[in-house]
Length: 68
Image 1 (tube, one colour):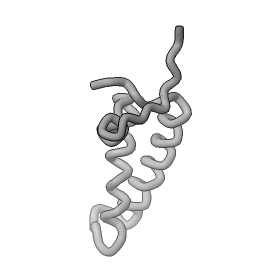
Image 2 (cartoon, helix red, strand yellow; image 1 turned 135 degrees about the vertical axis):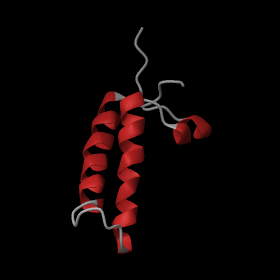
Image 3 (cartoon, helix red, strand yellow; image 1 turned 45 degrees about the horizontal axis):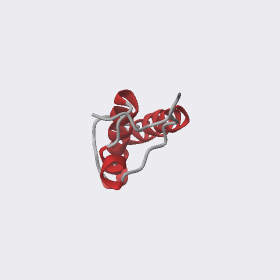
């Protein structure tokens, strides 16, 4: 997997991911209404952890700065 997620992008993904996961499970494990949308936070956390986003790869985008 190519590394295409920069440091700031990674931190934003972690914060948003944790917030969405907390929203999804605020009432326990019952996923009703819009709480299922909060599970998108898991995707953000995984892409932040691996520093690779499949959507970025498909679109040819990279938020990572290249060091020389």
